[in-house]
Amino acid sequence: MSLKSVIKDINNLKIQGATAIAQEAIRALISESKSVRQEGHQFIVRIEKMIADLLATRSTEPLMQNGLAFILVKLRQTSAKPASEMQAILEKTGLEYLELITDSTQKIVAKGKSLLKKNDNIFTHCHSSLVEKIIIAAWQDKNIAVYNTETRPLFQGRITAQNLLAQGVPTTMVADSAADFLISKHSGKELMMNIIILGADSISWEGNVYNKIGSYGIALAAWEAKIPLYIAATALKMDADNKIQIELRASSEIWSLKPGNLKILNFAFDLIPAKFITGIITEFGIVKPSLLKAKVAKNYSWLLKD
Ligand code: RUB
Image (cartoon, rainbow, N blue to C red; front, top):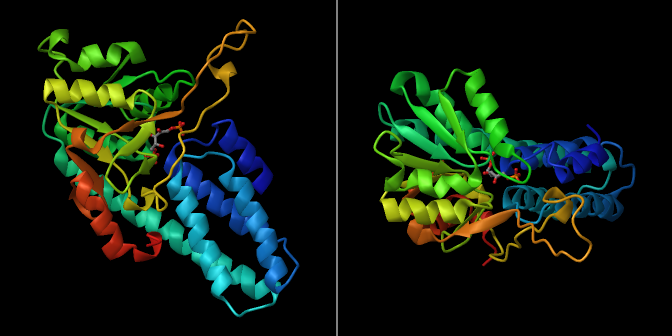
């Protein structure tokens, strides 16, 4: 796919979820870089423009941001000049980062699977490819059932439900506004959730997690009901600058024919404070949120700038 179509698909959420966004952005950059004929500094200038266009798509996505920065740093360090050599360096570095994502995904799925117990009721929100993979890996052995939200305004919960059902996983959906009640003790014994697993878009140095809007309320309800809340995410989602912006999306996603003077706030994400999170399922094991930065410093030192 061309860079232009990938940017369009990320913007309209045809490509959604932090992992898919990062992977597609890097693949598109690799592919588009093959058309650059300029050499040396001019090659880098062209790549910087492509990266800026990719970064402008979604503001709460460090997995993509860190990957693009990883490539750019390598490119700026090289003494190579011909476009073909610079392209080869870009491609090699991009593939290296994609490999890090694939490798961490495998480890997270294995660790997440081991966390689930027989007959667990699992609650999730939105569509996280990592959470989905963990559930699919675990469900047959463990006879689990999944409850998920529809995830307004763009209904990513339907992607989760459809994908899980296609694998045979017993799945039940609730409206977003029903999530907190379902998680609470008041919804009844049969509807008791054993574990909540959410994905993440961004993780701050303090271990706060940004995920789909609605995640904060789910975390509060889980805390009150004493249900463990886990986040499935690679440590590569750490926000290296610790200044992530919560994306505000178009009001038309909520009400396309709204009254002219009505203001709509369409937050794409919210923040789960670290204290509500039992553990983050990462490639380095299940980590307390406050300890994740140390793991990043040890294993991905290039990611932290100070
Ligand atoms: C998707 C979302 C997902 C995370 C993690 O939001 O919040 O939970 O991105 O996804 P959107 P993954 O639909 O707005 O992109 O586990 O696939 O990285």
